[in-house]
Length: 210
Image (cartoon, rainbow, N blue to C red; front, side, top):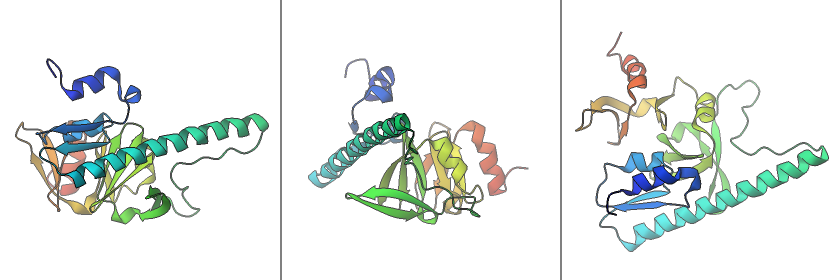
């Protein structure tokens, strides 16, 4: 793409105006930026047919979720117009006596199931969606990161970037990228970006800052 990258194109159009987008590249260093602008997946060359099928299936599931969300919004509009109680479908409500989420409802292979919050490794924002990373599994739910952050126990989860929330017990160290940018390294080897405004809070949790 002469003069522009795929990220430049998405930023110009805006994530909300883009169709389901899968980035294909030989470089892995732009993965977090791709998810920041609502990429469905990020394929690093070379990749096999199985990996491509996974990405394609993920895009189809996301489109299905968007279709369900449009249908829900239409139903809410009809119910509000008739005076009936509207249906709100985001994350499960916090039960009486429990301040923070214990489970999150997700759709997987056409089935609605529950994911234990304590099993979530980290969460990455993807436009109006949040991508839950649970071991080698990924789930997508429609919720703003701010809303999700408020429903998670701050003793167990920390928002280290505007688009990233991590489970604190998985945090191993605070490191720097080759560019000198702060990153959090998890016990499974994954490195995630840390914003400068949130680095101090992470340093305090690690006990390396007063």
